[in-house]
Picture 1 (cartoon, rainbow, N blue to C red):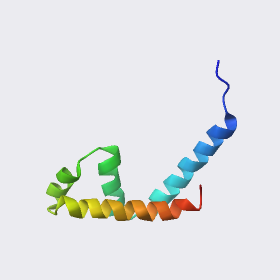
Picture 2 (cartoon, rainbow, N blue to C red):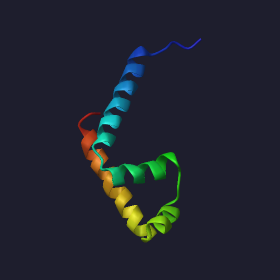
Picture 3 (cartoon, helix red, strand yellow):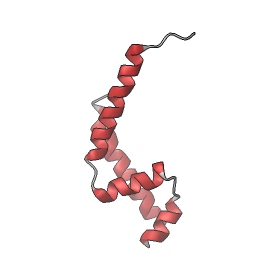
Picture 4 (cartoon, helix red, strand yellow):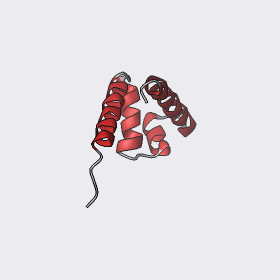
Length: 77
C-alpha cells in the first residue's frame, strides 16, 4: 500500500486555491474564453466563428489571459 504524502496533498490544495483566486480576478469575458477552451474543450476556430473574429485573435486573447494568470501565480509557487 502506498503511503499518503500529506504534505504533497496540502501543497496541491493550496495551489488549487491560488489558481481559483487568480481566475476570480479575470473579467467575465476572459473567464468565459478560458472555460470554453479548457473546460468545454472548444477549438479556437469554433470560438472565433461564434464571436465573428479570426482564430488568431482568439489565440492572442488566450495567450494574453494566460500571461496575466502566470504573472499572478508566479510569486505563489
